[in-house]
Each structure stands twice: as C-alpha cells, then as structure tokens.
Image 1 (tube, rainbow, N blue to C red):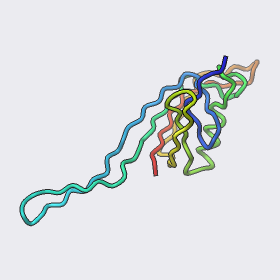
Image 2 (cartoon, rainbow, N blue to C red; image 1 turned 180 degrees about the horizontal axis):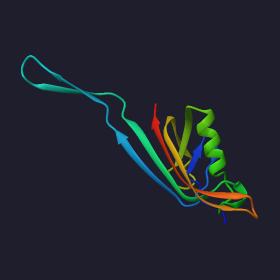
Image 3 (cartoon, rainbow, N blue to C red; image 1 turned 30 degrees about the vertical axis):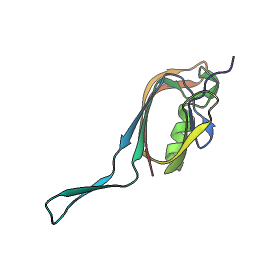
Image 4 (tube, helix red, strand yellow; image 1 turned 120 degrees about the vertical axis):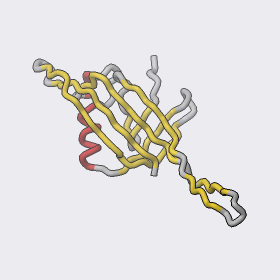
Amino acid sequence: MDLYKLLTIDGVEITEHGRTLKVDEEIAANDIDLASGHRRRYYSKNKQKFSINWKYLPSVQSVTVDGRVGQSYLSNLVNTRASVTVGIELAPGEGYTEYECFIDSYSEKLIRRHMPTKCSYYDVELSLVEV
C-alpha cells in the first residue's frame, strides 16, 4: 500500500506523523482615494501562509509512522536556511504545487525522551509565508 504524500520541503517528504496543515491567504491591496471622492483598490500578488503543526513528532526518522523525516530534519532546516520551497499535493497523482517561502516562525516543545531508542518526541509548530 502506498502512503499518500501531502507535503515536501525542498523536495524532501516530511512525515505525516500527527501533522495538521492550515493554509491562509494574505491579501495584499492598496487603497487610493481619487479626486472624484471614489476609492480604487489595487491588488498585488496574494501570498499563501502555511501553518504546520506536528504532535508527538519523533526526532528519529525510523520511528515516524511512515519512515519520512521528522523533528531533527526540521530543526536543522530552520537553523541553516531562511527560505525554502514548499510542495503541496492537492490530490493523489496530480503532482506538487510549489511555493517559494520564507520561514516565519518555528517552535518545538520537548514532550518525552525514550532512552532505549535514543529518540525524543516533540510538539512542533512551523509557519511559512510565500515570498
């Protein structure tokens, strides 16, 4: 059975382990008051904002439910990069829609350490905004 892949960051498939994804659109518009008393609104490119949360995310890839990268990859990515390419697959087999984004915020909270597997579990929040 092939698992459905929804999210990639820089071409790397990110685990679906306890993940939620929220996509918002930031509307960029300028209002100009005309001499006639009317107001005209000019729209520039609207930006997508991705809010991604993982609950109980393992730091070790082999422990995730689907064998894809987890917390250690995300933490390393945030500490070394300012912008990333986000791929979202809207339906199976349709391919990814890609967005160039910058990392707006990242936070992680240590939940548990499991000494036999040398794995830590985190609640992770990642916010990305389209450039």
